[in-house]
Amino acid sequence: MDHDSILEKATEIAQEAGRMVREVFPRTAIVEVDWKGPVNPVTKIDLDAEKLIVGRIREAFPDHRVLAEEGGGDEWRARGAPIWMIDPLDGTNNLAHGFPHVGISLAMVDEGVPVAGVVYDPLREETFSARMGGGATLNGDPISVSRVGQLAGAFLATGFPYDRTTAADNNVERLGYFLRRSQGVRRAGAAVLDLSYVACGRLDGFWEIRLSPWDVAAGVLLVREAGGLATDQRGELDCVSGDFVVASNGLIHSEMLRAISQAETG
Image (spheres, rainbow, N blue to C red):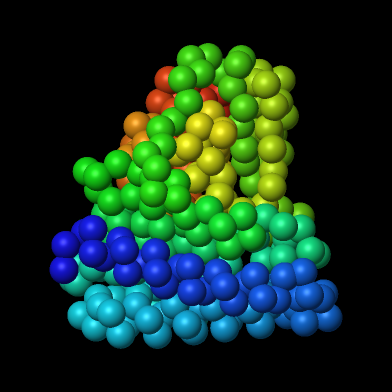
Protein backbone atom coordinates (compact mmCIF):
# COMPACT_ATOMS: atom_id res chain seq x y z
CA MET A 1 0.00 0.00 0.00
CA ASP A 2 1.45 3.40 -0.98
CA HIS A 3 1.70 6.31 1.42
CA ASP A 4 -1.28 8.11 -0.13
CA SER A 5 -3.51 5.10 0.53
CA ILE A 6 -2.08 4.72 4.03
CA LEU A 7 -2.79 8.37 4.76
CA GLU A 8 -6.33 8.06 3.43
CA LYS A 9 -7.01 5.10 5.72
CA ALA A 10 -5.46 6.85 8.73
CA THR A 11 -7.62 9.89 8.09
CA GLU A 12 -10.72 7.74 7.92
CA ILE A 13 -9.84 6.09 11.24
CA ALA A 14 -9.06 9.41 12.99
CA GLN A 15 -12.35 10.91 11.84
CA GLU A 16 -14.28 7.86 13.01
CA ALA A 17 -12.73 8.22 16.47
CA GLY A 18 -13.47 11.94 16.32
CA ARG A 19 -17.17 11.29 15.92
CA MET A 20 -17.09 9.42 19.22
CA VAL A 21 -15.52 12.45 20.90
CA ARG A 22 -18.10 14.85 19.44
CA GLU A 23 -20.91 12.68 20.75
CA VAL A 24 -19.77 13.02 24.36
CA PHE A 25 -18.60 16.64 24.34
CA PRO A 26 -19.34 18.58 26.48
CA ARG A 27 -21.25 15.95 28.44
CA THR A 28 -18.06 14.26 29.68
CA ALA A 29 -18.32 15.34 33.31
CA ILE A 30 -15.44 15.51 35.75
CA VAL A 31 -16.98 12.57 37.66
CA GLU A 32 -16.20 10.30 34.69
CA VAL A 33 -12.49 11.08 34.92
CA ASP A 34 -9.80 8.75 36.27
CA TRP A 35 -6.33 9.98 37.12
CA LYS A 36 -2.90 8.67 36.05
CA GLY A 37 -1.29 11.39 38.18
CA PRO A 38 -2.26 14.55 40.10
CA VAL A 39 -2.78 16.56 36.89
CA ASN A 40 -2.91 13.74 34.32
CA PRO A 41 -6.52 12.61 33.72
CA VAL A 42 -7.91 9.85 31.52
CA THR A 43 -11.57 9.55 30.56
CA LYS A 44 -13.66 6.69 29.21
CA ILE A 45 -13.61 8.33 25.79
CA ASP A 46 -9.77 8.19 25.76
CA LEU A 47 -9.97 4.43 26.24
CA ASP A 48 -12.87 3.88 23.85
CA ALA A 49 -11.28 5.98 21.10
CA GLU A 50 -7.96 4.17 21.50
CA LYS A 51 -9.64 0.78 21.35
CA LEU A 52 -11.35 1.77 18.10
CA ILE A 53 -8.20 3.22 16.54
CA VAL A 54 -5.95 0.32 17.49
CA GLY A 55 -8.50 -2.18 16.23
CA ARG A 56 -8.87 -0.38 12.89
CA ILE A 57 -5.10 -0.02 12.48
CA ARG A 58 -4.48 -3.71 13.17
CA GLU A 59 -7.23 -4.64 10.74
CA ALA A 60 -5.93 -2.37 7.97
CA PHE A 61 -2.21 -2.97 8.56
CA PRO A 62 -1.80 -6.41 10.17
CA ASP A 63 1.96 -6.45 9.63
CA HIS A 64 2.56 -3.09 11.32
CA ARG A 65 3.38 -2.46 14.97
CA VAL A 66 1.46 -0.18 17.33
CA LEU A 67 2.33 2.14 20.24
CA ALA A 68 -0.60 3.94 21.87
CA GLU A 69 -0.79 6.34 24.81
CA GLU A 70 -3.11 4.40 27.10
CA GLY A 71 -2.40 0.79 26.15
CA GLY A 72 1.29 0.94 25.28
CA GLY A 73 2.61 -1.47 22.66
CA ASP A 74 5.83 -2.04 20.79
CA GLU A 75 9.18 -0.31 21.31
CA TRP A 76 9.22 2.38 18.67
CA ARG A 77 13.00 2.64 18.39
CA ALA A 78 13.40 -1.07 17.57
CA ARG A 79 13.99 -1.88 13.94
CA GLY A 80 11.32 -3.81 12.11
CA ALA A 81 7.95 -3.17 10.53
CA PRO A 82 6.52 0.37 10.52
CA ILE A 83 4.97 1.41 13.82
CA TRP A 84 1.86 3.51 14.43
CA MET A 85 2.04 6.20 17.12
CA ILE A 86 -1.46 6.80 18.46
CA ASP A 87 -2.75 9.54 20.73
CA PRO A 88 -6.50 8.88 20.93
CA LEU A 89 -7.23 12.18 22.65
CA ASP A 90 -4.70 14.93 23.30
CA GLY A 91 -6.20 17.52 25.61
CA THR A 92 -8.04 15.21 28.00
CA ASN A 93 -7.89 17.83 30.76
CA ASN A 94 -9.56 20.26 28.36
CA LEU A 95 -12.29 17.75 27.53
CA ALA A 96 -12.88 16.91 31.18
CA HIS A 97 -13.54 20.58 31.89
CA GLY A 98 -15.60 21.32 28.78
CA PHE A 99 -12.81 23.36 27.18
CA PRO A 100 -13.23 22.82 23.40
CA HIS A 101 -9.65 22.16 22.32
CA VAL A 102 -8.66 18.53 21.70
CA GLY A 103 -6.95 16.52 18.98
CA ILE A 104 -6.53 12.95 17.77
CA SER A 105 -3.14 12.00 16.34
CA LEU A 106 -2.01 9.03 14.24
CA ALA A 107 1.43 8.71 12.68
CA MET A 108 3.18 5.91 10.85
CA VAL A 109 6.88 5.87 11.71
CA ASP A 110 9.40 3.86 9.69
CA GLU A 111 12.96 3.40 10.98
CA GLY A 112 12.41 6.19 13.50
CA VAL A 113 11.12 8.70 10.94
CA PRO A 114 7.47 9.81 10.58
CA VAL A 115 6.32 9.12 7.02
CA ALA A 116 2.54 9.62 7.24
CA GLY A 117 0.51 11.48 9.81
CA VAL A 118 -2.94 12.82 10.62
CA VAL A 119 -4.08 15.20 13.35
CA TYR A 120 -7.85 15.58 13.62
CA ASP A 121 -9.65 18.25 15.63
CA PRO A 122 -13.11 16.71 16.08
CA LEU A 123 -14.73 19.80 17.57
CA ARG A 124 -13.70 22.14 14.72
CA GLU A 125 -13.74 19.31 12.17
CA GLU A 126 -10.25 20.18 10.95
CA THR A 127 -8.07 17.45 9.46
CA PHE A 128 -4.34 18.11 9.20
CA SER A 129 -2.46 15.51 7.19
CA ALA A 130 0.97 14.97 5.67
CA ARG A 131 3.11 12.32 4.03
CA MET A 132 6.83 12.42 3.56
CA GLY A 133 7.67 14.28 0.38
CA GLY A 134 4.02 15.05 -0.31
CA GLY A 135 3.44 18.28 1.56
CA ALA A 136 0.87 19.04 4.25
CA THR A 137 -2.83 19.87 4.04
CA LEU A 138 -5.72 21.17 6.12
CA ASN A 139 -9.06 19.71 5.02
CA GLY A 140 -7.42 18.83 1.72
CA ASP A 141 -5.96 22.26 0.97
CA PRO A 142 -2.17 22.78 1.00
CA ILE A 143 -0.76 24.59 4.02
CA SER A 144 2.56 26.25 4.77
CA VAL A 145 4.32 27.78 7.72
CA SER A 146 4.33 31.52 8.42
CA ARG A 147 6.87 34.01 7.08
CA VAL A 148 7.60 35.84 10.35
CA GLY A 149 11.33 36.42 10.31
CA GLN A 150 12.21 37.47 13.84
CA LEU A 151 11.45 36.15 17.31
CA ALA A 152 10.30 39.62 18.38
CA GLY A 153 7.41 39.33 15.93
CA ALA A 154 6.60 35.70 16.65
CA PHE A 155 3.45 34.18 18.14
CA LEU A 156 4.41 31.06 20.10
CA ALA A 157 2.96 28.16 22.07
CA THR A 158 4.23 25.80 24.74
CA GLY A 159 3.06 23.39 27.42
CA PHE A 160 4.11 22.04 30.78
CA PRO A 161 4.97 18.48 31.87
CA TYR A 162 2.71 16.45 34.13
CA ASP A 163 5.39 16.45 36.85
CA ARG A 164 5.54 20.24 36.83
CA THR A 165 4.64 20.58 40.52
CA THR A 166 7.68 18.59 41.64
CA ALA A 167 10.27 18.60 38.83
CA ALA A 168 13.28 20.90 38.97
CA ASP A 169 12.75 21.73 35.28
CA ASN A 170 9.09 22.54 34.65
CA ASN A 171 9.56 24.88 31.64
CA VAL A 172 8.56 28.00 33.56
CA GLU A 173 11.95 29.70 33.16
CA ARG A 174 11.82 29.28 29.38
CA LEU A 175 8.26 30.62 29.32
CA GLY A 176 9.33 33.80 31.09
CA TYR A 177 12.25 34.22 28.72
CA PHE A 178 10.08 33.86 25.59
CA LEU A 179 7.31 36.07 26.97
CA ARG A 180 9.74 38.96 27.13
CA ARG A 181 11.07 38.37 23.61
CA SER A 182 8.03 37.55 21.46
CA GLN A 183 4.54 38.76 20.55
CA GLY A 184 3.07 36.29 23.01
CA VAL A 185 2.95 32.69 24.18
CA ARG A 186 -0.15 30.53 24.36
CA ARG A 187 -0.72 27.38 26.43
CA ALA A 188 -3.89 25.68 25.15
CA GLY A 189 -3.17 22.16 26.38
CA ALA A 190 -2.96 20.02 23.23
CA ALA A 191 0.51 19.63 21.74
CA VAL A 192 -0.78 17.85 18.63
CA LEU A 193 -2.77 20.97 17.75
CA ASP A 194 0.10 23.33 18.64
CA LEU A 195 2.29 21.54 16.10
CA SER A 196 -0.51 21.56 13.54
CA TYR A 197 -0.95 25.29 14.06
CA VAL A 198 2.75 25.87 13.40
CA ALA A 199 2.33 23.90 10.17
CA CYS A 200 -0.55 26.05 8.95
CA GLY A 201 0.91 29.38 10.09
CA ARG A 202 -1.41 30.15 13.00
CA LEU A 203 1.64 29.91 15.24
CA ASP A 204 5.21 30.79 14.34
CA GLY A 205 6.86 28.47 16.84
CA PHE A 206 6.35 25.91 19.60
CA TRP A 207 8.54 24.24 22.19
CA GLU A 208 7.83 21.72 24.93
CA ILE A 209 9.64 19.21 27.14
CA ARG A 210 8.92 15.66 28.29
CA LEU A 211 6.29 14.79 25.73
CA SER A 212 5.94 11.28 24.28
CA PRO A 213 6.34 9.96 20.72
CA TRP A 214 2.57 9.75 20.17
CA ASP A 215 2.30 13.46 21.07
CA VAL A 216 4.72 14.65 18.41
CA ALA A 217 5.23 12.17 15.55
CA ALA A 218 2.39 13.38 13.32
CA GLY A 219 2.96 17.04 14.18
CA VAL A 220 6.68 16.90 13.47
CA LEU A 221 5.92 15.55 9.99
CA LEU A 222 3.26 18.21 9.43
CA VAL A 223 5.65 21.02 10.31
CA ARG A 224 8.44 19.68 8.11
CA GLU A 225 6.16 19.04 5.13
CA ALA A 226 4.70 22.54 5.49
CA GLY A 227 8.20 24.02 5.10
CA GLY A 228 9.18 24.43 8.74
CA LEU A 229 11.71 22.88 11.09
CA ALA A 230 11.24 20.45 13.96
CA THR A 231 14.28 19.54 16.06
CA ASP A 232 15.39 18.98 19.62
CA GLN A 233 16.87 21.81 21.71
CA ARG A 234 20.28 21.27 20.11
CA GLY A 235 18.92 21.61 16.59
CA GLU A 236 19.15 17.89 15.86
CA LEU A 237 16.41 16.24 13.80
CA ASP A 238 15.95 13.24 16.11
CA CYS A 239 13.12 14.67 18.20
CA VAL A 240 10.40 12.02 17.84
CA SER A 241 11.02 10.82 21.40
CA GLY A 242 9.28 13.99 22.55
CA ASP A 243 11.90 14.62 25.24
CA PHE A 244 12.43 18.13 23.88
CA VAL A 245 10.71 19.44 20.77
CA VAL A 246 11.24 22.79 19.08
CA ALA A 247 9.12 23.49 16.00
CA SER A 248 9.02 26.67 13.96
CA ASN A 249 8.58 28.22 10.56
CA GLY A 250 12.34 27.77 10.15
CA LEU A 251 13.03 31.50 9.95
CA ILE A 252 13.02 31.99 13.72
CA HIS A 253 14.41 28.57 14.61
CA SER A 254 17.96 29.63 15.41
CA GLU A 255 16.66 32.47 17.60
CA MET A 256 14.40 30.03 19.45
CA LEU A 257 17.26 27.60 20.06
CA ARG A 258 19.46 30.45 21.27
CA ALA A 259 16.72 31.71 23.60
CA ILE A 260 16.26 28.23 25.05
CA SER A 261 19.99 27.93 25.70
CA GLN A 262 20.14 31.37 27.29
CA ALA A 263 17.11 30.68 29.49
CA GLU A 264 18.72 27.46 30.72
CA THR A 265 22.06 29.05 31.50
CA GLY A 266 20.62 32.21 33.04
